[in-house]
Length: 296
Image (tube, rainbow, N blue to C red):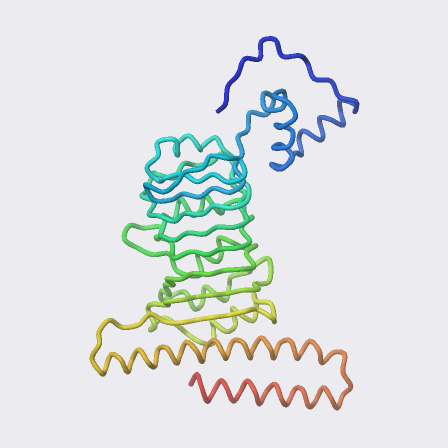
């Protein structure tokens, strides 16, 4: 927290009535506070709220920058613990490993973008997302609630109900993920969805997964899915990996067509009866062909 001598500070007077100013002060957003701080020390002395718009945590040895607009700090810098008094307002990026206990609990965290190049603990993830403001999520994965576990996809997605862009690049499906995904009620329609390197193929079920997508994704959603390859380089394993690659491509195509089918159904409401019949027949044949030819 910044400190300075306020002993001889002149009182601040405003042209607007006191009730109006009180209302403004109670509803100030971070971007407003930053501008007020630039006009007078009075406002910082009144609110004492430190703000960082974009915070980036990097590996040791990288260049550090300390600025309210964008701060870059090394993971081992002792000053990192002092950021617990800060309000992180727009984005949080971590490009290095964060051990448990390293990340401080920020006084406010209302980020819209969250990008993590390494796994972090479930508690840290909840702290960063509990405000429900994350709109863009791009992560490798999240450690689970219990030791030596990984958070399944449905728990991660449920934690960011207002995200329109979701990218998870090490996805884990457990035995309950298929049914749990169906019960997820996203508050906004997903516009971009990437689920990569999906493990535990035995727990992956196509039909419940498709229901989740159709329920929560926009009909123009960009999708991509792929599956974790098996380690090894003999012919049998290479053959398995080839099929896994093909399955991911077919699943992506199927979901894309199902979403297109949803879009066509919406347009039917504005068409004549004959056109409606033709479009319905076309959409059924199209989706049926992909479903039985490629996936099954």
